[in-house]
Length: 212
Image 1: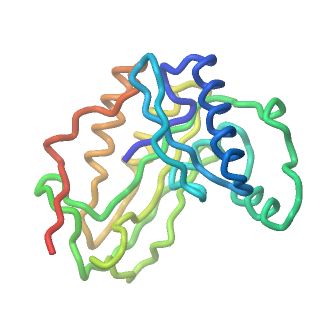
Image 2: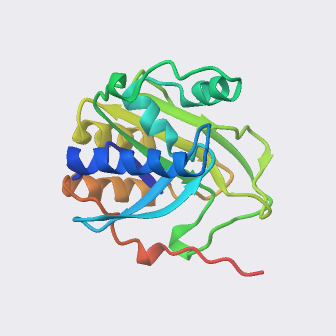
């Protein structure tokens, strides 16, 4: 539910090795275009998990710390253009944290509350980004992903980014449907207290389950 960039607790040597492995994987299959390579990291070694031939939902955290519009770059490459920058020219600045706002009821371990309309609103500032396609009166259906919005905050460091995210989540108003906002606020608070953690906190009390 929460993604960060850069990954906390990951040293630069491991980060560079992951990047090289990702590029090698794409070249091995002759892939051209935007893609996301996933690895598992146990604190010492990393292991290839999968490659998705697309940008993933967490790509805004990368955009926030690099100032690069990855969707634009994806379209340019698909049109036959070259990448505007080389890897060594990409500069990271600060830290970004993203939270996924879902139509869920964590207290009841329920993932969806169908046939409800929603009205999602939040105040914005230059360090905050809210990606959403939900408008007042929209129906949250059981047939689609229940995500209502992505809330992304930037800070000069991880602590500032987390604090801004928590403030943004506190300010969000969603009417007509239950959401996981309180769970996200609690999660971000736990991350604030464990600034070196690379793994997500235990959310076992808020598992989601769906039955057909």
